[in-house]
Length: 570
Image 1 (cartoon, rainbow, N blue to C red):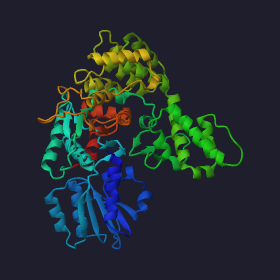
Image 2 (cartoon, rainbow, N blue to C red):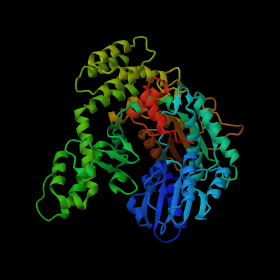
Image 3 (cartoon, rainbow, N blue to C red):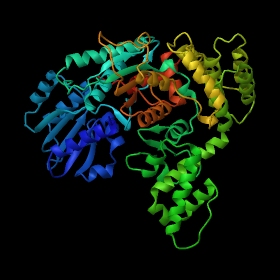
Image 4 (tube, rainbow, N blue to C red):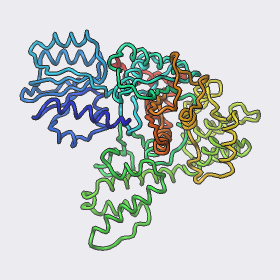
C-alpha cells in the first residue's frame, strides 16, 4: 500500500506505452501537481519526454514531428479543450490518459472530434490525488464544508479522489464512518455508490480479510492542527508552508537567488528522506555531521562548525562546495530559517504551554501560563491567538473559565478583529457540542488509566507529548475495539477479523503529525498497513482558513478565491 509508487507506476506506464522517440507531456493544472510531486523534471527527461505543456495554454506551437501523452482530469473543461485540440491537432499521435473514470458519452464526443485519426489510445489511469509520502495522500482542497454540510462540488471531488486511491491500490473496501458527522456519512455513501456503479473496475482478487476504509471528520479533533510541530516535515509545513513539496523562501533575509524556492522530496533527497520524522534537535546534529563529512573530503583547513550561522557562512563561502552539495546548502538554509523563527517567536516557550493545554488538565496553572505569555510582546499574533483557542477548546465548559478576560487581553495587545473572531469560530467548528469523541476528558477506564500512567512516567520530550486523536482511533480499530455505535459500518456486513489494510480519510484535512502517527503504527504493528489521506494537509494557518469558511465567518474575497480555484471541478 504505497500511494507514491502507485502514481509513479501509472506515469511510467503511460510513457512506455507511447513507445520510443521524443514526446510531449500535456497536462492540466491539477495533473501537473500530481506528476511533479512524484517525479522531478530531470527524471522524466530521461524517459524521452522533452516538453511539458498545459492543455489550457493558448501559446502552444504546432509540433507535428512529436507524439503527445495527455494526462488529464476528466472534467468537462478538459474534454472541451481536447475536442478543440483534436479538431486541429498540434502533434502527430495522441495517447490520452484520464486520471479517473470518464463517461461513455464523453468518449463518443472525443471520437467524433478525432476526424484526422490521430488518437492511438484512450485509457483511465487512476492517479487522481497528490501522493505526498508513501502512506499519505492529499486532494489539495481548501474549504470543503459550509456549516456542517458539504460544499457540493467538493463532495464530488472528494468522492473521485478517494475512489481513485482505492483503484490505484486495488482495494474494494468495507466502509466505516464517523457517526457524529453527517459529512462522513454522505461521503461514505457517495464512495459506495461509485463502487456499486463501477463494480467491474472494483472486481479485485478477494483477500482473506477485506480492506477497510474509515472516514473521519477534522472537527472531531481541532487541537492537532493548532499545535506547533517539532519533527522536520511537520515543522517545515507549520513555519514555512509546504505546497506540493515546494517551499517559498523568498522572504528569508539575505536569501540567495537559487534558494528562493526549494523542493523537499523524500523520493530524491536522501537527507530529507532520513530526517523526515526526526525532531529538530536531531536534525541540527545530522546536518552538522553531513557537513563535517564533506569537509573531510576537502584537503585544507578544518573549520569548526559550532552554530547554524557558522554553517551558513561555511556554505556561502565555498561555491565549489555549493555545487558539490545543493542538498546541504538547501537544508542548512531551511533549518537556519526554522531556527531563526523558533528564537524570534519564542516557540519553545509557546509550544510547552500548547502541549500542556493539549495534554494536561490543570486549570489554575493553564490560566496563569497563558496569561503570562499573552503579556510577552515577542509572542506573535498567531501564537497568542492559538494559545487562547487551545484554552477555549480545553476548558470550554469549565466553571471558572477566564476566556472573556483572555479575549480582552488579545484586544489590548492589538490583535486584529479577524483573529479574535477565529477563537469563537474554532469552538463552533470543533467544540464539545460537535465532537463525537472524548477528545478532552476520557470517560472510559482504559483511557483514564493510560493518562494516569503517562502522568507518572513523565514524557521524554515536553514538546512532543501530544498524541493526535487518530492514534487512539486506529489503536482501537486494530485491536477490534472501535465502537460500532460511534463508527458504524455502511451496509449490513461488518469485519469479524482484525483489519490488515486500512485507508483513513479525514474530511477537512489531515496533518503531518497524524502522518507521523500512521508511519509509526505501520512500523510497529506487523501485518497492518495503513494509508492516510485528507482533503488537504493542514497547518495552523490553512486550518483556520478552513474553519472560517466552514463557519461562514470568512470574508467575501476568501470565498470567491476558493470558489474560483475549484470552478473547474466536475
